[in-house]
Length: 450
Figure 1 (cartoon, helix red, strand yellow):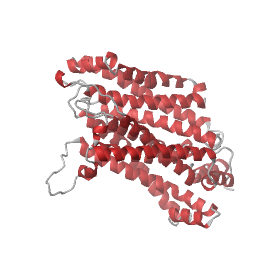
Figure 2 (cartoon, rainbow, N blue to C red):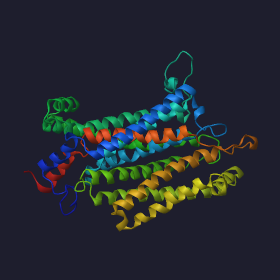
Figure 3 (tube, one colour):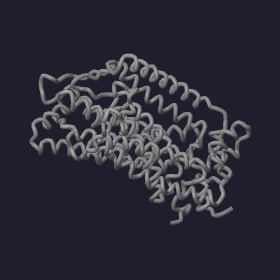
Figure 4 (cartoon, one colour):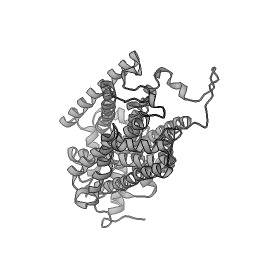
């Protein structure tokens, strides 16, 4: 179905082919600005803090964290689930909206795909560190080995490894293939020989020929079709890691859809957290418009309502089952030692998103930014509640104990944020933030050839 300027007036911001390519290309080709340099330094410092934490971990082991028996899972697994969830919305924005031919995605899909690749890359570090002997991380891969340790195909951990690796590889390919036309444009716009060689090598000989476009469109459609089912499989496998445990609060068949909804919820929040500063600091208000933020807000609200529904179902099923241990776990959430975590989750994930029913709030960038930040905080605490609150009081009363994080737990949390921001700031500096070729296609549909 064709698109008209009357139907979608915000899609191109009044740009022509030349002005659009020049504006987006200049962001990658122009010298570094002060705001970019400050962001780079801050994220680099956090990354170095993370590297120091890794060095301490390798030297002394996981005992530097606050984990113990019975809480043997804590910040490492919380961060893992949180980061991998953040990456899910990027693929949905790019892949699912591409398959459904939603034109408004063209302003958002490039940085959303980058968000996915970076978030999944960060998430993959934490299961490795949590092994205790991270230098044997390759043992988690199923392969013929001399110790005859064959994979247990009924375990979700095996399928979790498969799903994450497949999702990461498909996400990287989908992101990089989409960059090829724009890398060719940057190669042609570059003024220095070094940049021409740099972008020329990355463009892989892209010349914009008809056969190039034919193969590009076919591959793009194929990768989008592969990426969207992987969104659901990856977080469903993560959910089954918990569901297979006979632990109160975990052993539930509702976890896969619950985890997928939570992934979209936090992913849309991160997309807003990144979009709002980018459009302001880089002058992209005519490309990433208030209409785009409004649509992202509606998606986040819909996912948030599903998450709130799952919270209610968890409480209902605990009492409906009559299992005293499930009921005790629910009571611990409400009035136990970690009750403050539960009420933080309720405030951030249930109450705060209700402001998004108002069109005025959905178009207020400051309010949207605060709501999205609170959702990200709430989703992290939700994982804390899910893991720690279910483990600290097991079936045997004599084995119960509290979890107290150490400074190294916090270093790994904030250091992982630094790694993500470092990769994203480098992406903003060296690669096109918006898909130029897709925006040019919209101009062609809106204004016609020439």
